[in-house]
Image (cartoon, rainbow, N blue to C red; front, side, top):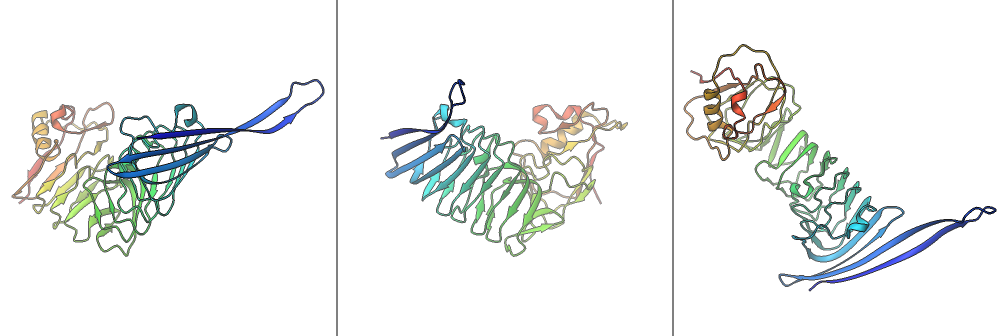
Length: 337
């Protein structure tokens, strides 16, 4: 059962009359709504106000709110007014609740907010800043799909895990972070609290503390070659995604698993006279970066040299099975003695 109660208050702010000039009226609306629901025996009650003059939205409540088939919690005629959002209460926020707020620029999630999940802020294209509380223990980065203006996220002490995925320019990780799902961290610059006992940041590259798992190689790191440490066993999905500088990656024989699209680098245009065939390239990436690829029992270290001879523009190789490989030319992949 859902109950909607909406009130609109018109406030006349000023009336100016000069001679015979028509009166000028400046007015603002305070839009107020209450929303209640039962979801899996959880009673949810929320309320919010929107000030159409300042663009501020105040949202508070308790329970679990999810709108899988709705455009947004806020009616379409009011969405354009929302520029800032403050959320309070013992509430879990799920898909579409704050979606499609195209003018929303800032979000503050106050202490007590329990969770945000997939598509909670979907397609808020102007969103630039989000403040998290320590009470959200495992936020999903997929909450911000389509938020193209969001460049940086800072997670406070108290956050214990990250899942989902969202590409950022900068991400800051706290000392309390214990787990990161595969492919979750995708950032140009990573900051990790030095007190964190579970992860390691070395030359800007994110590993687990034991250095057996490579989570993220920053896309703006300008080295042209990289030798993966000989104790790494797992390369996360999208670990090298969109790096435009790497020409050589050395993979040690310790690596037993390479995640989906782990080697999704961007190849810089060159005019190299390489003669390797597209069949060799396809075979290479069928093993190393095609969908659901896993490489086990590698018998020797391998070197991948990356080129794009005679390609007219920058391109991204996603997987051989998607027919992007034949346009790329590579020098070779071979076992080292």
